[in-house]
Image 1 (tube, rainbow, N blue to C red):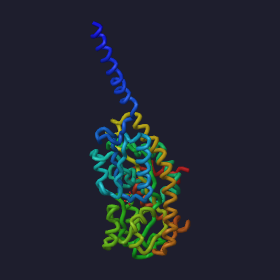
Image 2 (cartoon, rainbow, N blue to C red):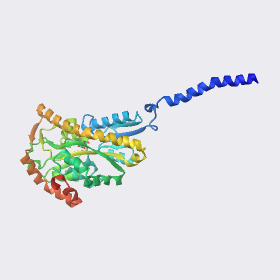
Image 3 (cartoon, protein in one colour):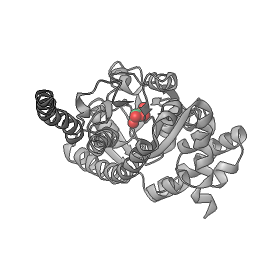
Image 4 (cartoon, rainbow, N blue to C red):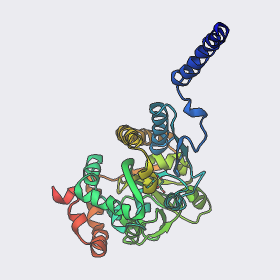
Length: 345
Ligand code: LMR
């Protein structure tokens, strides 16, 4: 009996520390999420069509870094820039199919789904960045992007590219009549098409990533874009004339596939939402600053003839663009137009 008691005691003395150590090892060591497989981590594939060195490219990277840090690597945002995963014109369908989870397309590229969003494309609709964010986050703006919900899309914010300028290789443009007969690349939006056909130009809907090539081949004479986009594709090397017209706004809706969003845990949704709010403010400053820097770079390079529209010129252009506003109102009613800051206050 004494012997049996001795054996039991010895067994307990040997095994209890082992069991305790095993329990401790699982509770003491943190989980290394980075070593988890894709099906254990949350992976957000974020595709876009511009370069890394643009406001959108930099903000996408910043968002990915912050999310990784704040989730200890449990959430991974994989950014695919330059249209490497899906090209312009493909990424929206890829998001709708759920092949990727996030994109940030120019609002103009959503006008096939929700044509009223082309309010953002109306020339001289906004005088400054504050007017844009005020409009988009007002009830009228929210009603616009809420329409994307019907397409399984959730809008998670607004990023700026900036105000657009005009370039071409035929002639200097200070008066809108100089646009007559020019073939100009646009993003896919009826309002952008109207904007140019009003002045006798031929609008050409061409993917962003092929603009350089189409200009080089001589299939188009010019294009409109923000300076950060123009310089990121080195378009100034192919164009003789640049007009600083600030005639339209180019911005992005940050979009998630809604089905994907809804299956995320609430704490993950909060982390993503708060991080996006922070990155949005950062991106707004960056976009402004980068467009200013690009303007001084272009001025200094003396590689393209630059023309600046004066306030008087702009007033004339604005008046001449009236038919584009009439077109919008005829198609989609006047409510969105009347609510534009320049008409409402
Ligand atoms: C364009 O097609 O010109 C832009 O939408 C590209 C971009 O995403 O800024």
